Length: 351
Ligand code: FES
Ligand SMILES: [Fe+2]
Image (cartoon, rainbow, N blue to C red; front, side, top):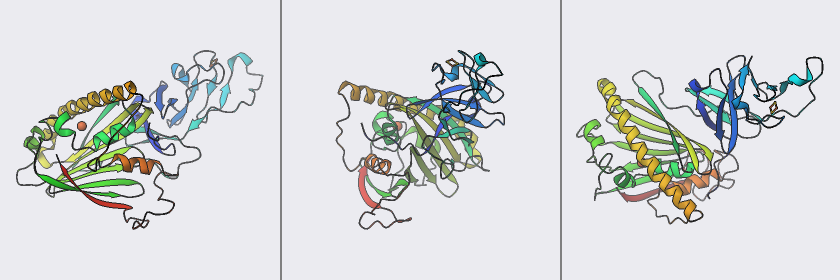
């Protein structure tokens, strides 16, 4: 399997509204976590394994900002320290156990994010663009994929599959050639599509004004975020952002935020586009679970790539960095550090 996504990064662990008075079980990068809120309502993430006999703390309850194991009632505070062992009574001190691993957790943009690396994070989590800003409308989806985070990201940033998996919905096959300019930076990869024609499809017929060629950019952001932007003229802008939380090697929880500015017709766009988006993502769920079943059947991937597979190689390259977002130790030829791209190429592509 390809190298894993970096641990030293923030990932969405749950929707904030799901972390209420009861503990919540979740898994990030293969690590089972219990999420709960401390006495100040701040989210907390601990390894979901009681120190005593390893019961899942997420099956217990939250008492006074601590999580209580359902088996013998040991309690843990937000730093993972054991603060109560009922069988010892109140007059005997709790032995100095090493605490449960606790991961930095914050609430942001309606999600609980956890930082899975060692030590303290250098910055806060990713912020979703234009979320809650005046004139912008948002809806969200949460989708479980039986596929690796890399397979999900490649799918979300891959145009050629749309004419097959989403036949007629998004795009139809088009003999016209266009160009993709692909630029890789230390923390992201951008593909700008040049001369992209207006597609013959249901989505375009409904939402894309005639005579307004779209501006289309696909972007990968470290560690596991895809962002797709479509602009139609100066006032209409559509952004689909997907944060992919790796659950295990072949399971990913995808949190999708669709934010758009469409003037007066925005409520109508949402009414139509929300069910349509759910329909389209189900088609991707099906194709990716089929792909994962194949990888298992044949004992792992044996991929063959072509230059129109724009993203996967770059995603692997950025995941291989010692620090997420760090520039190469020795910059590639012609790719000075900073905002100048490390890689800048043009690829001819047909949809
Ligand atoms: S297993 Fe948790 S208190 Fe015994
Ligand atoms: Fe798709």
